[in-house]
Image (cartoon, rainbow over all chains, first blue to last red; front, side):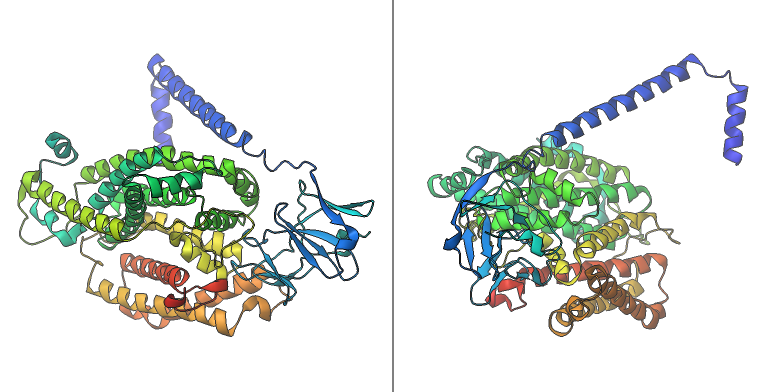
Length: 172
Length: 420
């Protein structure tokens, strides 16, 4: 309270604002604007070019004929970075290799019938559902298309999900 | 040359600030290591190619075909490791001699910032060899960022330029590691030094007899020279005996088992084994950073006296707290690993609560009990209490890091170091 009183008294006794003060403030204001501009430019320069890899484009990869995949089997497509998993009921899903915990590559353990992440031993079943934490979400997946009895996977579009559901499977 | 060194120092200093156990010369050692990093870093850049297809081969070329190539790489690697350890010890020394308050509080903040920069300079360098070790360590670490609330996912994608590590990531890390960070570190180090001088040099305990002022040359300069020589000797022996790690070329389809974050993040990774990521990667580390930055600005009753651990009471309470922290951290790790996994026991409750709020509450209860039934009896001053909290945090961090580095084997299961 006392401080502001003093300030008010000061401004009242002085002539409103003199030339020196005006230029002093103008310089400061210009400096702040220039700094903000330069900062803004740097931030936009950095971030505008950095997201091109996340843009999703359709990119089909032919996996093979439907009959080549037995129900309950998992086939690895390392080039496409996915596992094509055929459920017991015949439904297809293309599961991403990336563990939803911290992004390590999961591997399919045939005798245990589960995907296991080597980093923190998260486990997922054949539909990608979490069997063992720390992973909290089911494995991501790529859309599957079946044309003329051939399974194709769109490896340009990665779909994230909370848990595995029936409508994510594709049937021949 | 002589003039450069003399300009960084005052012309006369107090004789008692020369005692080695006042500072252990840690700040000076850190500067020498930074200079060695810059020299060897420039040498490495003559051969290194920052692209995913060529990075690994260029490192292999350096290793197999270049005279003193492996030696240069080893010096760079080990001086990076030493720098982090010595900067950490320097941070402990400054805290435990009370040199963080009053005219030194801003410099404490700059010191913390420097420590952070050194960590991230190390981290960005870790990726550059583009081998399996680098690729998966950086994958795991950058995915931790994704757990920050709201901005996490987009921040992570911006830093690595996509969902997985790619050429953009390498380019970004390379630029940070070889241009921005060295420049920033050098600039802030100079400022850091200048502020020490401005605060009147090294903080000294008050003694009955007044310490004599003596000329820096030769008294300090010669001592610095000896410390520098010994440090270089140790560094070169390490570089000659132990090779910097280099595994096979990075393979995005095949994760290492186990995959570990770089050793200085092993503590955070160990926390991730026990807490929900929101707590392990965000709440706990950020609380610690805020606490560390806040240390100079608590209201203390008496000025710092410059004595190690403040007082006899301070020494005893620090020892007890260190023991408590060790036991509590180890017990927590073992209990969570072998007795009770909160998330498995309470599957119906969201993991954020069962694996975050509940274990944290248990930890707070333990700490509260220790304070109420033991620490309170010491009748500590504010500074001594802050010191006890600091000791708890640092010791817990060290125990977590050692566990992550030496006691986690295949599938990240707990095991003994000789099985890792």
